[in-house]
Figure 1 (cartoon, rainbow, N blue to C red):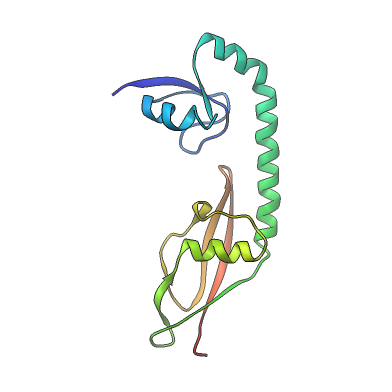
Figure 2: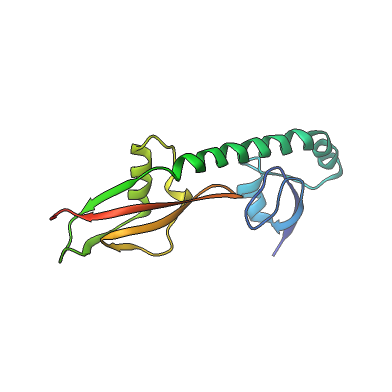
Length: 152
């Protein structure tokens, strides 16, 4: 296993925040962090470059966090309702998936990807269920969806 030292250019959950020097597997750095400009190899030249850019990067992260907090406030005020076919008026034939929730949010005018939605357990019954939306590594909005039977 080969590892490399990188300097993070943005906060990455489970890895670190802007400016942290972390040791990661070479493949992760080569295939994800470096091409997506989320990190720089930790060389002396890159450390100097990062030192000059640090304030700008931290300001950009703070702005992104503030925007995510504002979006979270807007999201927590919406009412989501989905109607599905049920077998006995309570149990759904399928389930309400992360993709369904993302579609509902997009219909409400929010640009939320399904990868941002955290669903602890599949939704398979009628009623109100909660789920979370990760808007930023430090900002998570808690929402609820009301599932109704089509045969009411």
